[in-house]
Amino acid sequence: MNARQPVLHGTHVRLEPLERAHIAGLVVAAGGDLALYQWSAVPRGTAEMTHYVGSALAGREAGTAVPFATVRIADGAVVGSSRFFDIERWPWPSGHPGARRSGPDGCEIGYTWLAASAIRTAANTEAKLLMLTHAFEEWGVRRVCFHTDARNERSRTALARIGAHFEGVLRAHRLGTDLTARDSARFSILAAEWPGVKQRLRERLARA
Image (cartoon, helix red, strand yellow):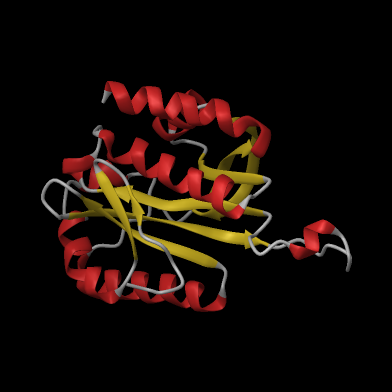
């Protein structure tokens, strides 16, 4: 495991630092119906997955991303991936308490996808709980944000349901899976909102 990145342990899933050793499992996990990933850029096949993992690892080396492989605890299968990225460290003035912080001030969670066998299970809820807990309680971030294709109603509904705040739509924000300039719906959770979001996630997990 990568010494600089923790393993996040849950009851249903374990988030391991992404490594090239996960490529074969990720290829299998991504091998389901393409319709499942209409709005998510999920790499297919060994060549695409190798490039995907290599890019994620380069982000980790640069300090701009913290990528995970999502592993189902019941059988040890790799069932997807997610990562922290756009990790921000604000330019606090020297002597300000913020300048003495070791963790980042804000980040985004994204590049999240799951195998068909893990969709609509506890995996996604628990993975978000693990990552948000780490961001707010270990790093002490002020904000976590999410962007999803504005057409992805399922993702937008899921983010709103856990208490993420819809901030608006960024027009022509990123390349979409259909190779158009997609509009992105932006959501965020602030540190003051985290206790309520955490409770919602725990309640959803208990019902899963």
